[in-house]
Amino acid sequence: MTRRQHIAARGQEGFTLMELMVVLALLSVIAALVAPQLRGFVTGRASTEECRRFAALTEYAREHAIGNAVRVALWVDEDGDSYGLRDTRTSRDIYTYQTATGLTITPFDEEGEALEEDTELVIWPDGEIDFESPASYHIDEKGTTVFVIELNENGTRYEVTTP
Image (tube, rainbow, N blue to C red; front, side, top):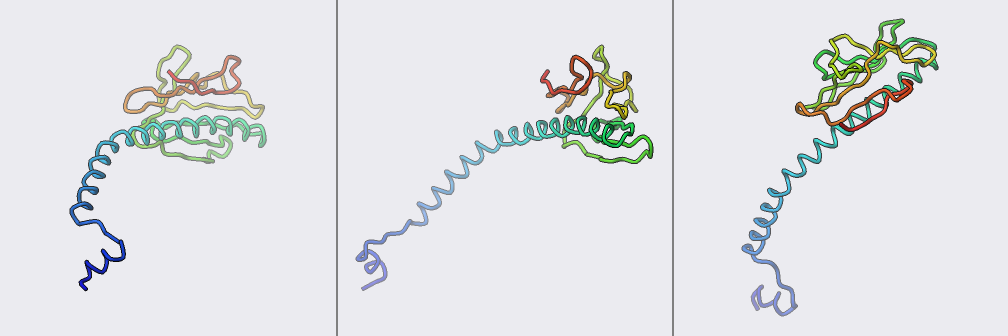
């Protein structure tokens, strides 16, 4: 009895090489169609996470200023691709972050004008936000604003909004 006859007698059949190649070809076509949509999903998620991290840092800055009785400054570099929190007493950075690839953060004033470099969000030891601090920050992805982090109505905290 040959091997093929023996397998057939037990009722076990396998896939042919041609059948496996057809299935792999179909999976490749499906993956090629789905991949571009997934790229947009990952990019959108990066901007959402960056927004959450920046907003959380504004809250942490306030808590750190109050809890340690120090003045702190949240800074954004002139290119908008990194930001951090600085203890103004020691000029030491407490935290420094790089923005995700393709994202920039820009500070704006009350009139909606982009602010010059070296503009910082300053929080005093009592938790008050300095009146010269930016009114909002725009998180841009490839030149388009995707999130705005702006002072709330009474000027005590920053809140996330969409443009």
